[in-house]
Image (tube, rainbow, N blue to C red; front, side, top):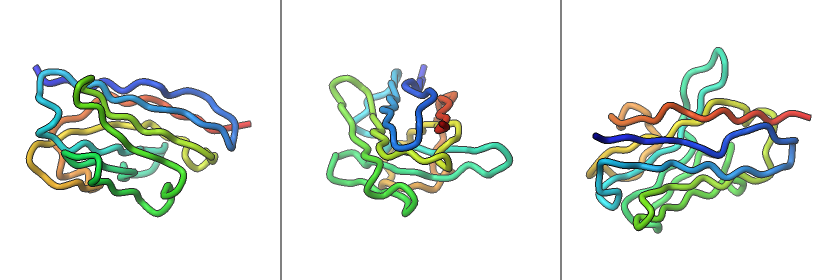
Amino acid sequence: QLQLVESGGGLVQPGGSLRLSCAVSGLLLHFYSIGWFRQAPGKEREGVSCIGTSNSSTKYVASVKGRFTISRDNAKNTVYLQMNSLKPEDTAVYYCAAEAYIPCTVHPGSYDYWGQGTQVTVSS
């Protein structure tokens, strides 16, 4: 059974850092592109970053470029999102999603498999 589980969220002050993890099971991770998305209250879910089947294929939306880094460890079946210099506007529930045999994309509609999300709150 395919399962994605996010962890690593929490409360952090502006300027702080968090590392989110997306642990996947029930699939061979190296065949899958993984996306990170977020949804703030009252807003639509938006793409944040994605990573293709190799670490060399990554994308970031403009609002997080230079602050967030996505990486994957296929041996551990885990994808990470390192988030630095966090801002209050980064506050949201963060989700990871998986899809096989697609290029890296931050379009939510391209993914069929989703985790339950982890809350990130940036506040002083």
